[in-house]
Length: 364
Image (cartoon, rainbow, N blue to C red; front, top):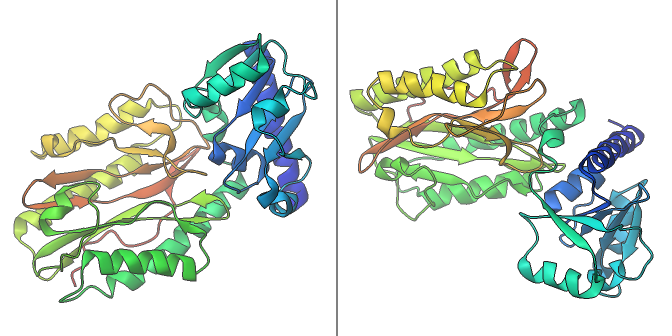
């Protein structure tokens, strides 16, 4: 997508936000979530606030450190380099805020809200949560392209680090290589701290890598992703180091089949919890229902975890154009764990996995 088209796309997004604000009776909206700000403006700095003002204008606030960066990364949006604290700037009378101003309830601290109240006087602050989810869930062609590039880059790294596993190699060795190689190949950073867990530690879904060396006969869970041009990837593969038991192979096959079932069953218009149930029931029928304790998946975009959520408590519907993970797992404490994860784009004909890396059991 050219910069002109990208500018048009972001302008259309901001127009949708104003329409939703009007429908909700909101005079203005202060966005404090950096991921959403980048999605709406392109600005990637670590200090930013975005104001949707009552006269249908958008204003991006940052500080002196980013005055050149904000010029390079944004277009078609007013920017202010703050000299005074943001509450002072907002109280200056330069911006049409109206009487009812919305704040992101899940991204504004009590202290920040108190500062705004002290400086801005008689104004009704309205908390909003998940205000942008319905827009962020639907991915356009450019967003999908960026995530496909993030996936391809991460799969190149995965292939390289799997080849490094051997006697004396530790979880930290592989995790460090993942981070280094992501950056070396052009990623901005990891999309989350890599999970590398061998043997009994594989039964911890979010295990932190340690200096423990891999032992023969272990299954190794590798969960990793990176950020490319502001968009994330997320993938998990489980590999075998040496000869594994028949039970380990059986559990691997159950997870592999469950993951493929999730891909095949996903359809636009179905309830997210129904997709979770389809896979969960399959694992339960195989005798491991209690060993699958997390949700089936989550959305991926400018953040590695975003809407939609796909789990037992999900209330939403899977819409065409959404992108989410399908990542069943079986975890047997004190023994081993298995997880397989792809990102899938939901289209009119079902779910298309973005990952191409084999899901057959790799034996090293």
